[in-house]
Length: 110
Image (cartoon, rainbow, N blue to C red; front, side, top):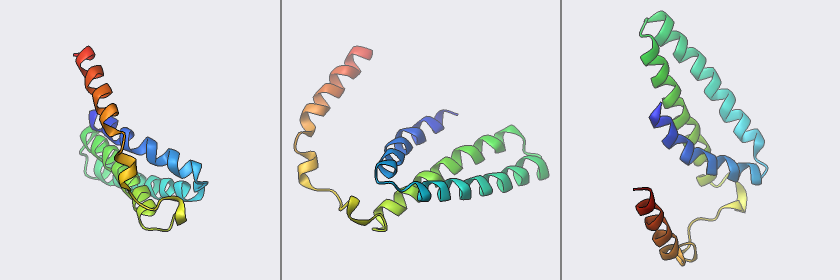
């Protein structure tokens, strides 16, 4: 389940962005589609083919990536309106201070 932690790190900011933009119907639609695919794949791989717990883990982790990619695709497609107009150089203006703080924190934990 360790790969799922990486998905969470990507999913939570995307989900928060969609919540702030009041795009809850999109999030619900993606979740409903993922639930349907999850049910079918879990049944097929775990019960029908008998692949067991390994197949369940692969399906769960894979579908989290599908959720993230579907939500990210919605944001980047332009269907989200003028909420996100792309990256600008201004977003990276104060990045060096963040990098220094991150490196210092990493050294403390190491």
